[in-house]
Image (cartoon, rainbow, N blue to C red; front, side, top):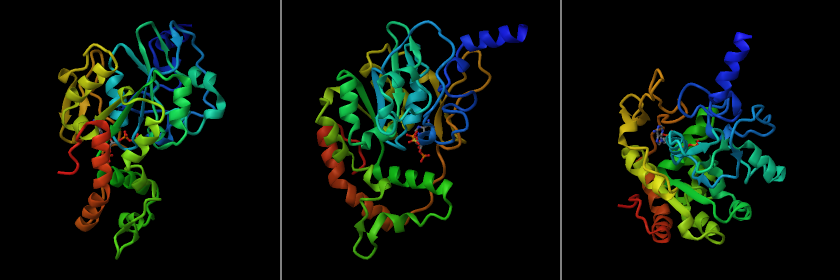
Length: 312
Ligand SMILES: Nc1ncnc2c1ncn2[C@@H]1O[C@H](COP(=O)(O)OS(=O)(=O)O)[C@@H](OP(=O)(O)O)[C@H]1O
C-alpha cells in the first residue's frame, strides 16, 4: 500500500503521468529507448492514465525546424519556464501521423492550466510540403519557431547522425556531389535539401505571415543561450524567466548546459546524440557547399530580415 501510494504521488509530480515526457537522465532524454530525436515518434503510444488538473490543448507554439538546428536544446531550455508545458518526444503528427486526426494529436499533449502554453517540436515539419496547410487548418494563430544553423554545418551534422547508425555509409563528399569534377551538388540528398531554407520558407509563407515566425540562430543558441532565449520568451509573450543564471558552459561537452535545478542532484546537458564529433570534410568540399548555399542564404536573410552571418 505504501509503495502504491508513493508511486501515485510520484506520478502526480510528473513523469509517469505523461508517457511522452522525457525520461529521467540527460536533458532531452526523449521517449524511452530513443537515442535520436527523429526516432521519437510515438505512434501507437498509450494514452495517459492519470487525469490531472488542466486541459489538453493544441499547441499554441511549435518548433517546426530545422533538423540538427538545435531544436532539442531550445525545447529543453523552454521547459524550465513555468508557463510552458511541452511534449518531450516528437509527435510527427503533421508529417507522418495526420490520418490519426486532430483529437489524437491533442490527446498527446500535456495538460495546461490557463495562461500556460502548450508546445511540441518536430523539426521535419519545416520541409514537409503539407505541414503549413495542416497547421493552418488546426489554428492560423499558431506561433512557429524555426532554429536555423549554417546549412553546411547542418548538412555535416545530419550526415554524422546517419553515419553513427550506418557505419558503411559512403563518404560525405560522395553523397553531396552528383559530379565531383564539375562540382554539381546533389540537391536530392536530404542532408543538402533541408538547408535550402528560403525554398522551404516560401511554402510556409503561402499560409502564415512572417509575424507568426521566430527564427532562432542555432549558433547563438550555443554562444549566447540566454540572449536567444530572451527573444524566444518575448515572442511567446512570456515573462523573461530564463536568463543567464540558468546556464553554464560545459567545457567537456563543448555546449551550454542547464545549471543544477533546485532539489536535483546534477546539472543537465543534452545526451550523447548531441554534439557528436563531426568527420573532417576537405576544405574544397566545404567551399563548394558554401558557394552553393550562398544565394539561398542571402534570399533567406532578405525574407526574414535577419542576417545569420553564415556568408561573411
Ligand atoms: N546546449 C546544447 N547541447 C548540445 N547540443 C546543442 C546545444 N545547443 C545546440 N546544440 C546543437 O544541437 C544539434 C542537434 O540539433 P537538434 O536537436 O535540432 O537535432 S535533431 O534534429 O532533433 O536530431 C547538435 O548538433 P551536433 O553538434 O552536430 O550533434 C548541437 O550542435
